Image (cartoon, rainbow, N blue to C red; front, side, top):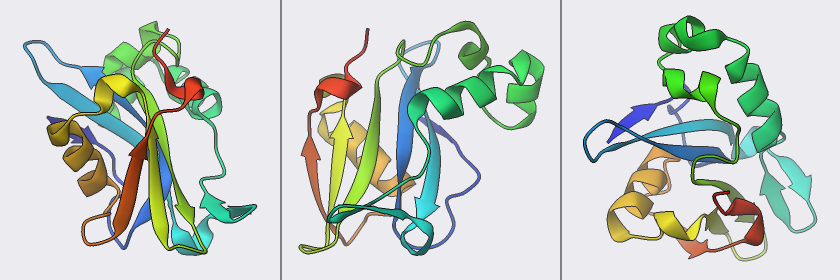
Length: 137
């Protein structure tokens, strides 16, 4: 597994992510994330202010070379945002719990651990859930 992200430093984060298959049997996790201090309130939750479509389109417009320069897979340039398994992490303020909403394809111990590591969720309370918004098309 390779992580393509340059925003990882700091405490726990909320945000959006994708799992992009690699040649062989691996995956690259790509993410756009926000610290809790910079997250937006959404009811009882704190969430990342950007959506999957919005971020993906910004990345796609970089083209294959621009993506590679940023450490992102070139496959982004050739696919729609729904093509790869994806998810979102939000923080429920009243219970101090992170909710990891992810495509059910990603609901395995290894991948969940990689996602939680990417978002610095080790040592926090988190719950993994499915959501109809995060199903691969």
